[in-house]
Image 1: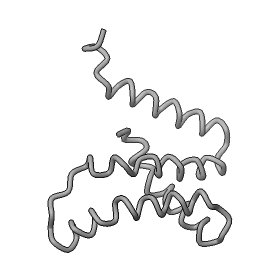
Image 2: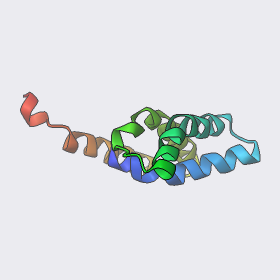
Image 3: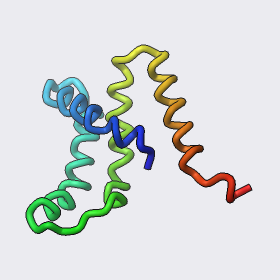
Image 4: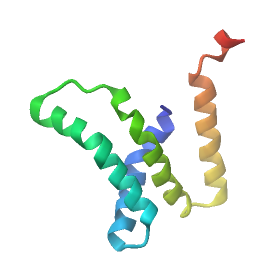
Length: 102
């Protein structure tokens, strides 16, 4: 799980839901449906029954976050897209313990 993807996911899902509501994006509908279908039951169990929820329960939802981020990336300049891709890659290499692999 990349922290930059997780931190930008709420905004991306909001944009995806907005485009879905306007009827202009089937990818947005797919991303929103995927999030609610996979994480909705876990969230409801946490909210209603105070069940313990762990961050790795969000693991199946990350591809939906990336689909929603693809929708947001259409509206920003190319330099912002490259900067975001660079920060995601930097966070991957910073978070992954490569010093133990080599």
